[in-house]
Image (tube, one colour):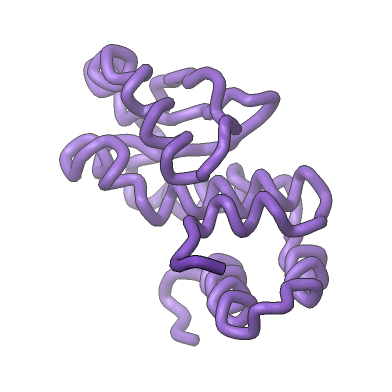
Length: 152
């Protein structure tokens, strides 16, 4: 290795199920969403899923959805740059203001995952040879699986 590599590129090279890879890629975008859309838009939008090359983004109402729609090509380009590959071919913006109401935030986490894939993801991580990368990704998976109020 000549130097540091993008985490998206490293994850793309790991042999694992496509669904698990999409979840890793989505989690990377969530962690760096402020870099993709800017701080104000990041507080009013969330990447929800990547399916068939389309990044689905929820917006906190129609005005935020319109602003995100105008920036959709830039969002796609930034997502590709972060993931290190051409995984995002399109961006679909959906107005979902209920996701941003504080009492509904817990439901949002359940909407993001059809079921708890943590054991499957953790098993896939065991194939990663780089110990530091494996440990970092394991921490990320564990943190995502825990409720927000619970500390690690």
